[in-house]
Amino acid sequence: MPARASYRDLVRITGPWFLVLSFLARLPAAMGPLGVITLVVAATGSYGTAGLATAAFGIGAALGGPVTGTLADRFGQRAVGIATAIVDAAAYAALVLAVTGGLSAAVLPLAALAGFAMPQVGPLVRVRWAVLLGDRGQQRRLPTAMAYEGAADEASFLAGPALVGILALSGWAGAPLLVGSVLTVLAAVPFALHRTVPPVLRAPRADAPAGPAAAEDAGRMPFSRVAVLVAAMSVIGIVFGATQTGVTAFADSIGSAGSAGLIYAVLGVGSAVAGLAVAWLPESLGPVSRYVWSAAALVGGSATLLLAHSTLSALGTVVVLGVTAAPYLISGYALAGRLCPPRRAGMVMTLLASGVVAGVSLTAAAAGRHPDPYGYRGAFTVPLAAAVLGLALAALVAPGLRRAVHAADRADAATTPHPATRPTALTSA
Image 1 (cartoon, rainbow, N blue to C red):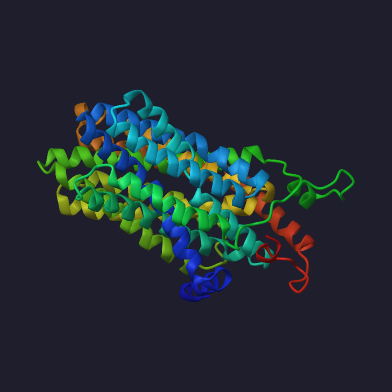
Image 2: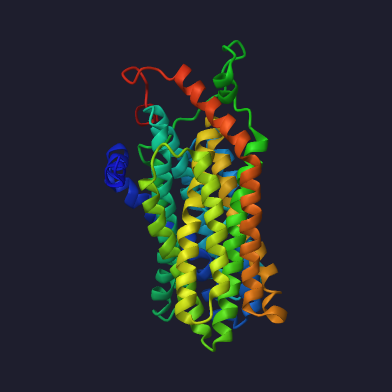
């Protein structure tokens, strides 16, 4: 099916305003790190303090994601989404007051709280797609939905910092975070209330019939599969974090430090475009094959970074990396949506997102040691090494993942009711 038709089908399932709403609800998270830096540097003049506050935000986000996902699985996305949106909006506003009011002791805890309570829009909207498409017996369209979500994520992480920059021109450094606070209430709360919210799946009774599907419904977490997918997503986080450090070192080496942001932003553009194009891949290419081939492509994309020697060549290599990174990210989320138990979908998706965040945060610091003795190419060896390890992991676990996907297909075929009698998440929410 042509990709354009596939995307039209997604719009028919949710309605067009849902896609707009879910995009707007992501923007505060994308605005957070740069908004914190802008505010703290303007108020204190200390990049060290700003770095600590941003690190606290990132650590809070990495830890809070799985907590939010687990609570959403247990109590539903509606209640948890509203609660996190309100707490996050309050934390943003309180952080602005603490920094501008000179309450330095409160800055790091409030930054960590803002990250911890961040509404997990990206992971939880992927859960909604898994439920909506599963209810319709259209699991094979899940990669298309994940492709769109990957592109939406990339677009938000381009638009968020840009919005921070525009708002900072107002002359008040607290404006970006206050706008993020208001946007969280205006977009994340309606997202939590939208009719696509999946029902809370309860564990079956003790006398429920046994079988593979029943085991999954009982919420038995396939820890080995989840660990593999989190490790795979940490690989892409390492690639992103080390590339950011390498691009900064490269821009410094050519005497154009200000171009680092532009060069790195091109990665997001390439990734967003490639993410949408993933829908053109044939359905016959299964989720595990996509994962393995995308891991191989990521090695090639990471290797091109070593060819950078001018601004133009750096832009080209970063575009190639973005194009190869998107299918890798999408295949990881698609596998998680296909293999994780429905009752644990929120926790699994947020764990994967936290894997990316952790990889970016930890590796950006570690890769910073390489540019000094080895130049920017030393930093660029880190994403290449991570991609090689990611390919080795994919090749190692592919047989087991294929068996798990085949088992899930058989279970779905045996338990899926006729479409005319199947309740959907839209009607049972």
